[in-house]
Length: 172
Ligand code: FES
Ligand code: FES
Image (cartoon, rainbow, N blue to C red):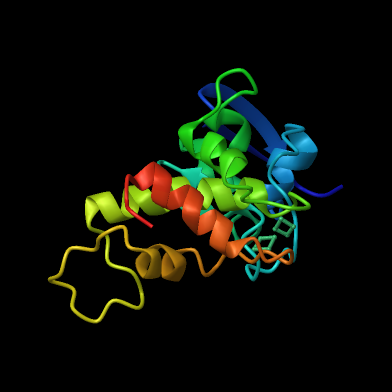
């Protein structure tokens, strides 16, 4: 039998305990073991962003991370951001601005978008930023650069940018 390992973390505010094959990714733990299927599996190789979730407020590609590495962490998935009757402002803005077509990339886009606005607010430099002394602002270019790891095969990019601009309170 494959050896298993216990892991305890909080998912969307709820304490969860799992016993897993240590090779299980956080993505598979969420989808297969906790049945939180809002988080999508696109490439399973860190290339598409469909699996983006937040760990202690910071976005990660959950397909690239082993679940057992998240002992004690607080994980937020799309299911934890809002509910159909109480949408997160970013979810509402995606609907208003048609920020999706097929919707497959959307949970990852929304988790990433929420985390990106927070990164900008906290002054976290992006990889493309050359002058680390300059505080980033929520411009279209800045937001698109930071969202570049979230691929949308339907090409909803400009609508996603509009939704983010609205939440950021920026002019488009
Ligand atoms: Fe994780 Fe594509 S499924 S980046
Ligand atoms: Fe279809 Fe983005 S809405 S992949």
